[in-house]
Length: 292
Image (cartoon, rainbow, N blue to C red; front, side):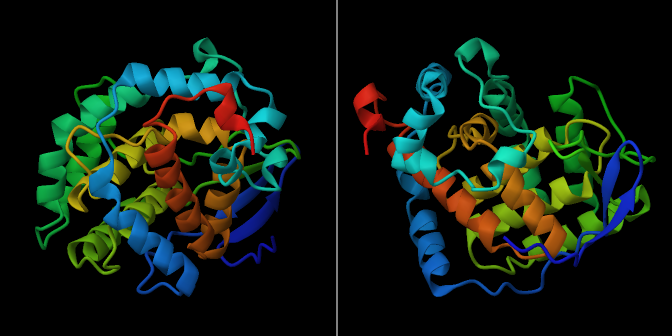
């Protein structure tokens, strides 16, 4: 994968070496291949078919897959679709058992159920103020705090295996970034719920508006937008847990998007995530499922 430095500058410090991300740019339009566009349309139409899954079922099935060897996991065609050839260079780990997986599904779904209606209501308001308040409220809830604020200082990720880390954009651009994101969602600019959810997820991760809880906040917003697109109330896509099966495939695609502004790889990843949920999480997983 070629990564042109469209949205980042390289600042070398010892330690660490940093990719300094530019301010996010919410796309006005997307150049999507015909094949991916068809996959997005099918995935959106299938949202209504997703049955509400109990937390115990999600844990059992993902823990089963995580307990298999990487080779066994790789034979599962829908797990393999989540992987990426560059994933081995990521900081991501695949935990070996249920006790090692940091389950976020229960908390995140509860916060979504609590905030979804007001968040979606903010997306039909022409002004971004209510949307920004909802983002702040979600972040506070996932951290167990009565309130929170946007960060005012720099923040960066831990280094990857090569010693490189990602330094997120300056905090002064947070409000304008969220306002631009709200405008795109208010206009339903992309005419596909999965595209809108992915754009919101990517922009929130790219901007990293909080010192902590950005991933949890972005996953809740992603799921809320899928509910607006037809996903049943009560359903929650366990992105965090599925990412651990991807062996860095999620991180590679997300970082490619924020580095280049090319959304196709991340969109394809979430099409595969939804396919994984529909086919794998809603059936009993046995060792036989992991044969090619």
